[in-house]
Length: 160
Ligand code: FE
Image (tube, rainbow, N blue to C red; front, side):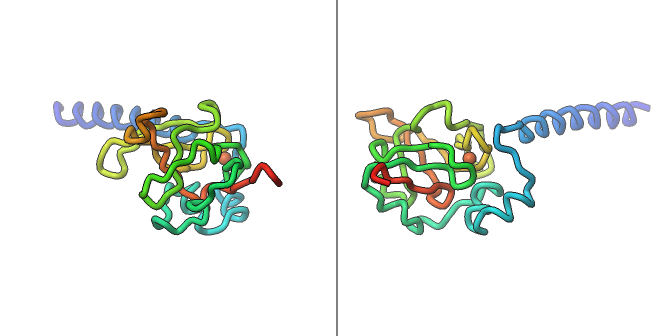
């Protein structure tokens, strides 16, 4: 009798966890589309990063080299994410910023998928994965390093 009780108890606990996880990952964002719709709209590389939490190859994005004033927007929904004035050369091979354009425009989630505790940065408007934020950014400003996949963003120069 006891093992059966334990099995049922375990099942209930696991179910609860499962539900909690689902409600978290299924947060409804203002811009919500089916995975099929995202797949049809985004390039395969952008889809992999934004919707499957992929990471682009270091030094592969043309956005690494951008120095002209402008705004980096979400490649999926156009949400304004970062400004050139907050960009810095981190040497990592990914576009890096010491802060978002507005804290309300991004969302943070704990992420352990890399084998160590990290903080994932997602677009607050569509929930797309952007990258991660670390505490080894420029000490003279915020101390934060937003390590963002270039393929998850488009650059809009101010002059445009
Ligand atoms: Fe977005």
